[in-house]
Length: 185
Ligand SMILES: Nc1[nH]c(=O)nc2c1ncn2[C@H]1C[C@H](O)[C@@H](COP(=O)(O)OP(=O)(O)OP(=O)(O)O)O1
Image 1: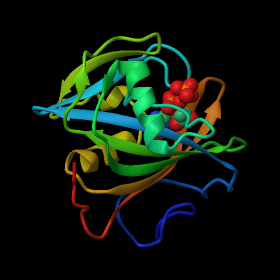
Image 2 (image 1 turned 180 degrees about the vertical axis):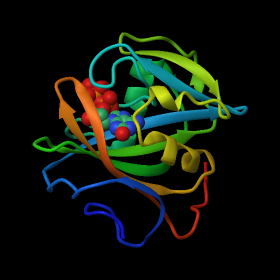
Image 3 (image 1 turned 60 degrees about the vertical axis):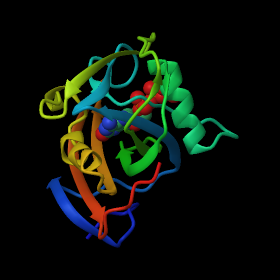
């Protein structure tokens, strides 16, 4: 059964970890964008802040008065210098006890315009989709990124304990909607 915070009509793809899910908290909204082209995935090497020295998509907080899609487009432009037609790929709930839940809307783009540009926060880098640097990414990403690549809409939850600057993965669950969504853009 999907964990609290996820829709209950999902089919489990992967789950792991032990103990109870952490208690509910207020939700803060974030975005994350992955560009895929010619068998390659564009990631950013994070140069500062949470997740420093790890690879991730491009994204951040949704600001007040901004739609999630506008936030995703703004962050992609700010962090990678490009714009792209975005398709909603899935959602991830990132949970740390005592902190607000991060609800991350994750988008995929199959093309982009502009020139990929390094920013203060991210150094963009292409990886073959067969050689994604999962060992240097957030721990549960290896279970849902393949779903993004195969265009299966997913929902995931990942609970972490925080020890100083380190996040220790505790428990995670990844599922898909029973039908693959059609992609239109
Ligand atoms: N790919 C990912 N996998 C994961 O498990 N957690 C992720 C994740 N990407 C982001 N998170 C978590 C970490 C963090 O608590 C929250 C937001 O992280 P971000 O790096 O997107 O935000 P920032 O704090 O850099 O926001 P901005 O300052 O607005 O850019 O979501």
